[in-house]
Length: 355
Ligand code: PHE
Image (cartoon, rainbow, N blue to C red; front, side):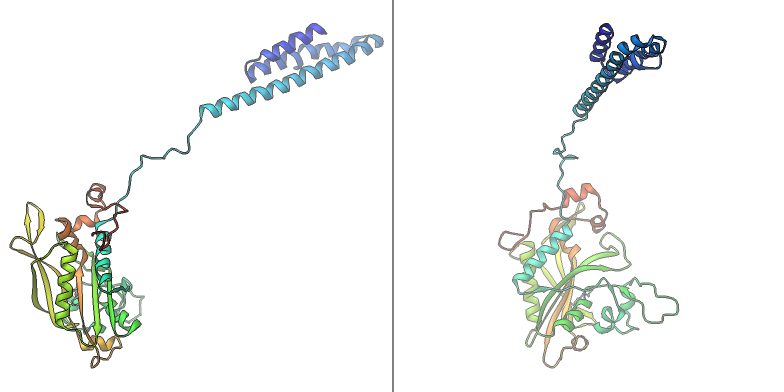
């Protein structure tokens, strides 16, 4: 009995893994195991002998079984420890190389424009990109048969069959926000409205989605002179120069009278766009005195109030300021372009800190 105990407890203690331990268990307690066979022999013994041997044999069987269970638990703990050590992972490490995203030039320029006009007392107004026909056209004195409707290359939204109302449009300019601002706050007004606009047009300087910023100033005595001063101040602040060459060209818009388009002198050389030199002019905005009918549509009395409005291409002035030759690249999401022309997230433009 003592020999058996020593043999199996020794084998259990030195089993290197669970498979080795299982072999020991089968050799001792399995159907044909050594201890199991001894227990079977009990049946052939005379009663006195059996009474003496059985308790000791049962004790041995239990002792070996619990030694196996203890060893098994110890081996499993060791295996888990080993696995945890092998699969150790530092979850505080970054998952990928750290790479800062960039602020898109359109976002940056929109923020710059907003800062400059905020210093001149302008609030920011907003309107929907899917606009109704009335705000985009009629209220701006563009009648249904007016050629400007065709000139705008409008994207129309679908209407349900049998619905004969004029379809909504993707707004072709930010001017409908003029009407919404007038309706919402009445006169006097000083707002800008930056945002997306849409026209079916595509080449190096046109994209079907682009950005404008509308400006609207209404008071009792605002004149064309105020418009000119405001635009010159803006352009100087935006391009951070003492003077720029601006060209005010007499023009026509249904919603302003008189109207002027403004161009900036620039040059295109080897695909690079430069400001303030050369013989090219890039049109950057349309402007004029708000038409009396437009004031009326906005619920403002044109015999009491007057003002100016302008609509400027944000993408255009971004191209000029940062020397970006192709408008289409703005919207291609090419990572190389974005890293080159993008701005740091903390590079927040302020008038005091510099644009
Ligand atoms: N809405 C005009 C355009 O998109 C620009 C404009 C705005 C002109 C305001 C005059 C006044 O071309």
